[in-house]
View 1 (tube, rainbow, N blue to C red):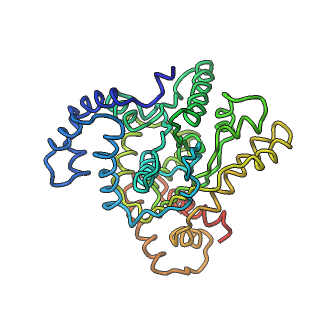
View 2: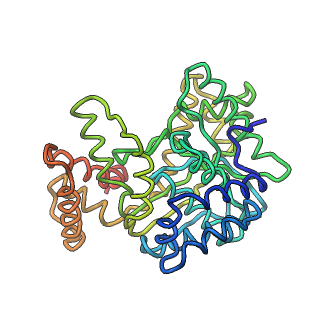
View 3: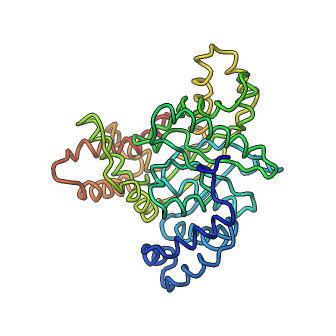
Length: 371
């Protein structure tokens, strides 16, 4: 059961990583993650991996530590006390980067001797054997999206049942999942009611009992420098001009590479107060159609309250609103960043429109907090 979507087990991981070790990308991956070392060292390590935990300890933990050292000004966090006593949750998270949001969370757990979670990832990222092997060896659950409506209903029920099962297994695990389909492109984080309804598909008809069993925990992921910010602003611009944005083949992989390599500034992750039965009873008292709307609002309010607003967010809001700069150095750095990013765009685009889109991505958290 769940064979097509679950993460690989130890034996499958060992076999998958032997396949990964032979991929032509290994030289490039090794050069970035382990600079100065012979790529054959990474190949040989992958060929001797014994299972999932061995892979996390010998490869992924040091790899993420390297990424943190090379591309961030530090990772901070709060709320780990919620995981004491082996508590497991469905972590509904704001989503800034395709790969690193969940990778940083795993790093925090590993660094603090907490069990690693499993990670829900859209099948748009698992488009060949190499990516499938790498992702599913990394405790990743495949979220099927590219299918017809009837099959989507069945795969959604399967995903819901799998997540509920993992929370209650003999050796349970938390599950990380974005609180919406894909990353926000405008900086406005909002939980999709459809996701909450999908998660509920495997439960009982009693709203409180059903949602309580999922052990929902909002998680706020804040980056000082927006991951792939210009790409997101450009996508919003294209949608504004033409009504839709069609991804190029390989664009998701490009976003993964850019997100890993680019500078991120400071990163903060807040594990918020889990959704309680009292919260759920308040939702259950509402009309049936309003229950999920209210639950989404509770999740969003906790994510927003825990969101780390950086000086650059305030500077962006001041620029958009024409206010005097309260932090001149930060504003000057932001203007320099904007110029560099906009200069990289095609000549045909309206740079002022994309500049405003990019500023809005940064300004929205500060605006929503009333700053």
